Length: 148
View 1 (cartoon, helix red, strand yellow):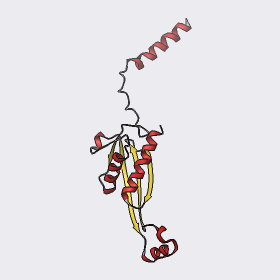
View 2 (tube, helix red, strand yellow):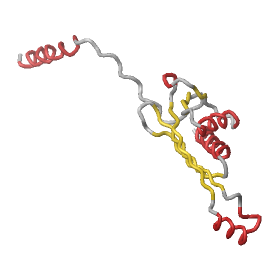
View 3 (cartoon, helix red, strand yellow):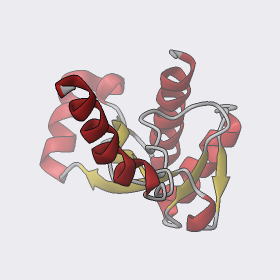
View 4 (cartoon, one colour):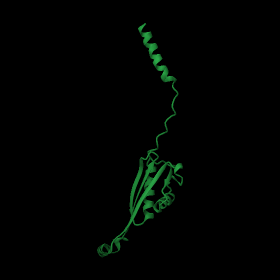
């Protein structure tokens, strides 16, 4: 008798939970890595455009889009260039001759975030011009995608 009461009480307690309508399934989590076929929104800066061109040149298996709403990932770029000062340049030329380089440096940092704001790829490149830096970052992104 006691077992029957406990069983009926358990059934009564379970009914309200079962009768409640199910809420909509939560949105799937944002991807945590850039996969082949991903859509990237690249900021329309000078370096951003060079990076988009490098993506095409290096055959990175992603698509650059111009609409943020259609993007899976967002590319943020920062860049700066420096020129050696006169005395520093002369000293390097005297010490290293033709091996002193051009005296120009271009630093670029690229980070890719998903819709949740999590960084899924980042790379810093130091090259002699922004096109070389953009191609370096695109090549590293391609390696990162192919690794998985």
